[in-house]
Length: 369
Image 1 (cartoon, rainbow, N blue to C red):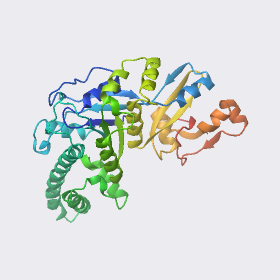
Image 2: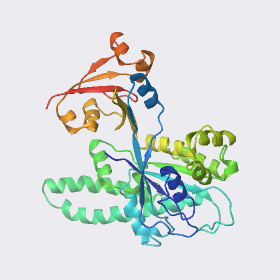
Image 3: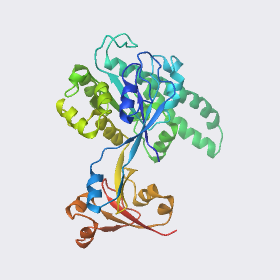
Image 4: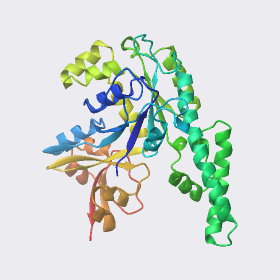
């Protein structure tokens, strides 16, 4: 189960620089001209979580295995992309494959770096990309509705299914025509929820706005990033302030040098840590752990996942033959200084198939195949 965040934005806003810093590689080109990134670059990024080291220390684990997210650097989008302008068609096909969107927005002035729209206006830039995604969804849904209308006439199970699809798609089309993304639609039942997931609409994907500011403004943002923060709040999205230039420098330093550098800038953590953590939240993910003398392992599951689903993250046989889960909360594990004392104090619970995994749970699974 791989979760992907697509990094998108207009050309020359710092997408590839941010991606390079995220992955600490130079695989993504970063040049001062549009469409530098043609094929999407993919990088696995460690999710910062200091809980893993603490648990490993208590258990004497020989190896640490953190959890990861995948970030995808996608070609810059321009006005008219939904009609094939620039690399629009490639952009749209690549973004359909990701689970969430990190929209990098230029919130700094620099005459040496051109802006494809000719001026710096982050709210306009947001509107350009959102509009292109909505137009692409409108075109996609309209084509589907035309085909569905032919099937609706059939007096059969296929006809009933087509009618359900057409009814929902027509609601979504109306919403998009009003200038609202499809994620604003609230599914009326589980069937609609499933249809929405399978439709792969661009505007149903959750969005994190990453405001790229200058080095001097990264600690508190600026008027431009403040506008995006306000916009995000109004639209049920999240935003973070980063400086791609700073992140590129930090990514080349070791841990101690990073701490000194961040301290000098009055920063508690890197902007990338904020992006990764918010991306994790954006995908509605959480972490559980398996801890032992050989390894301390962090695992990713969706929030509200059941214990058999968590077991399946380790191995499909664990889910198929699931019997029980031994569970200790992170807080109890720390307070008891390990698994043995947690058992002795009655802090280990046996949970069945209906148990909903909590973030930070330490779990061991009993199974039979």
